[in-house]
Length: 308
Image (tube, rainbow, N blue to C red; front, top):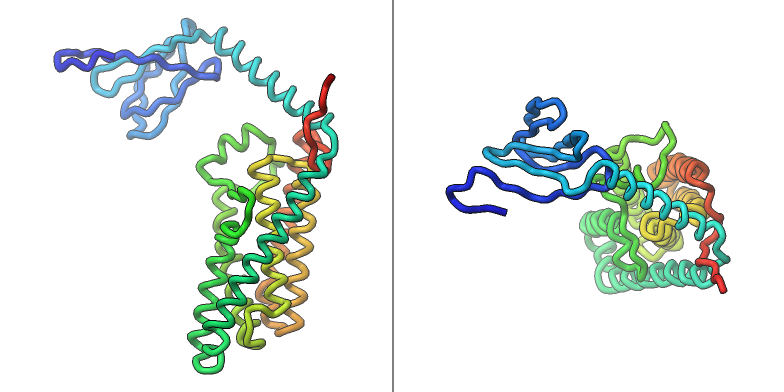
């Protein structure tokens, strides 16, 4: 790289796994094949290489070139595809992983216990007395507490239960196929925010009626959140599509249990949280469709088969 003050040309090496494209960040881009400008206003732009595997852009004076020809890049892409096929084959031929099942159950139970312990402490040292003396303040605290818990319950999980990010959606689509009716990525966070409000409001109603946040109905919600966090770990972190397809049935079943439990305490709360079960029913259908069009992995966790 020549950064001298008198330099009018800067060179950098770029490597890409795609045979004919590369993404760079620039203000102004020149298409190397057609020689036409494309203003991209500082965002990532895709540039088409020429037959020699060269590409250029302009951001004031400057050029860029690739060190890998299209033929070399195509070979690398084929190697990557082959490795993905091998990885999928290893999963399909793997043996049943009993230890993973024990891990999922133990992690879910641990999270339920941890959240319940925190709720018990809040009930004993704050909410119990506040419910009797200032119901409005107590309801407000419970509403905020469970809205936060709806999105951050995974901090109580011993597993990595990270949720997918919109920014990673393009990469996720490359890793696994999606059915044509899959909602746009932006829909999911909007729906989950709405579900957070419904969980918060309905739980506040149950608390106002029962006077406690450790009521069996609310613990049913805690169990639902914990099962969901374990499922996130299986689907989004471990990427075990088969186990996730079975696991999502536990998630949606626990949601219907919450609806029934809340309805038994106060019917209005059951109606308020009912859309959660409806949404998860749709999400379950999506999960099973994704499993079906991505090779139908075993419907149980596997570990690589040992070859002697």
